[in-house]
Length: 257
View (tube, rainbow, N blue to C red):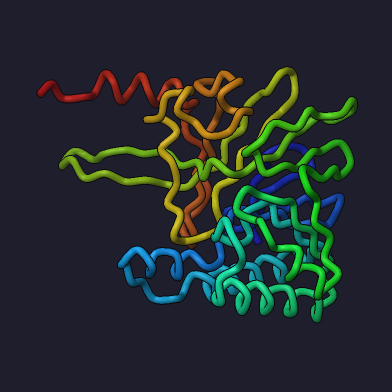
């Protein structure tokens, strides 16, 4: 198993969009958005209902490789803002049943899409953390709303933003790559997680002005100083230049119209 360190005690396992906290034997994933296909179908866009099976296989692989005894879903486990759709009921129930039967402890940190999820979690005695969760000196919060870190917190891990870096090749074709972002927030380390969902390609952070970002943590940070770690399944993990350098490079290389 290949592990790339994000910070001491926290690694990216095998180019997956996940964090393994070794000392706490805990795997952290975010933004599964289970049920997204149903929401798209109601808008007239029909996609195969395949994202859940992909994410379940990914989790199975990560749990087998890391031996993690706990999983933290860092918000937006489901997609609908309202009551769970039939797809969400079936797939979230299957996921939690599979994990609890395997003896894996499950925690869910509420995301902005996780309304009415307690009805499902309570069937499996899964804890719902309303705003945040603390593991050692790490605070985990979804990132859609600001939570003041307590004294002693050294690292904040958030999700919500679905970070990616965008680039174009010489032929003008555009690409987007999911990434982690590592930077500083008011004297503490902050890590932004990419979405596990294969349907969430992400927001091109290097193309988005700070005021256009979703999370209050990022709007209050010097995002240009953040370092992206791109993850490509079955390809690898790549440390890119700081966001500000990527912005500057893109500006210099832009062809005049």
